[in-house]
Length: 334
Image (tube, rainbow, N blue to C red; front, side, top):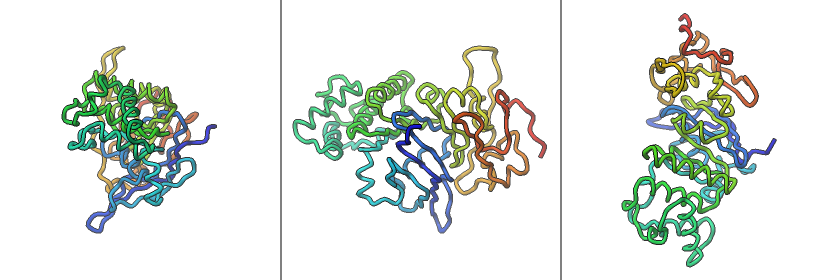
């Protein structure tokens, strides 16, 4: 097998507040191969974004990060600021979900792109301007030379997101983390941005982590999917296996809530309750209070991670057969 580009092992994140600690990420293990597209899904509050902010050292000082994150065997957790500065943007770049809050409103687009090129590739002057024009052309922005003089407020949400992608590509990263890159965009622009990311990945060979709560977006754009709940990784599989034969009740619940375009009409299932706040999950399975199959041991015993198929693992006490959905079965007795 190909050696992983980035390997996350036992990653934990605890936030300190008023002398109390709450765990937002709890022992996440992930590996991303060169050129791979990995999707990370889950409800808001599942720890999807915090996982990667922790990996890049972008969390506030009150966050305590444990575990290991390595890129080509170089440790990032606890690394010196100078080491992280050499990784951010150049080896690992991140696109955030709200471009309007990430771009500097008092500087023109061209200035911000040149700054990124100077920082990550040492370009300046005419060389930086030429590279900036190439980046804007690569992300599909027409009349690129005129756009260099625009401020962020003069661009639409879709164009600002393209500028953010161009800035992320300025360092020619090995891994691009796209954190809900289409949340604030309409369906047409969303499709264009996702097609753009897929095209860039094909052309450059970079790896992609797509963070989203939209299962449809993830299904069409990644090779492998990891499902997170309450800071824990509950299921991981190749895309076709996860969407065709999910084995964790939480993943099954997410899929049961999606409407189908073909076949007979059916009532959509809804997962009751909400994701527990950090530090307030039960000592056993965090999903147990919402799970239709929860048993007494689920409340007190952390579930083991089982290999349930080729490159398919799930963290559940129960061994649910392929083709069986927890949301079509009666609730287990209390």
